[in-house]
Image (tube, rainbow, N blue to C red; front, top):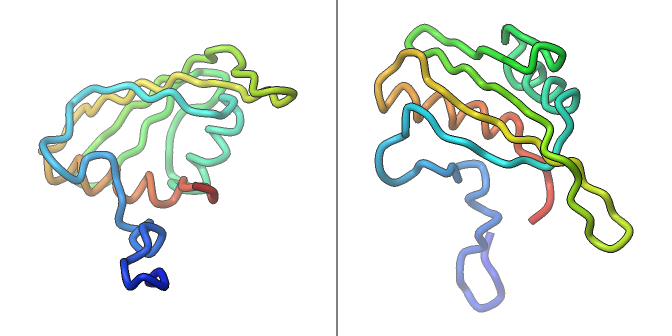
Length: 119
């Protein structure tokens, strides 16, 4: 997809965007998400049906043949934007096994499956 100016639209590449396209994928990192633990669980299960854990446990484990990722979640209050209240969730990602290429591929698949609309 191209803009009238001829430049490529960033939305055209949305399916390939991932936080770790450049440089190594850290064994541990943290993200703050706009979600509830239950909503995160629903998204994880939709993205990775074989995932272990639950919102009640505040822990999920996503695995493939080469890699294992543990995600611990913790509610982080509400962000208010005018009248909107957006639940915040801290997600701590920790790879239990897998090299950099394995980590990158697992994250790419998980992030793409959990991607929401919007800008």
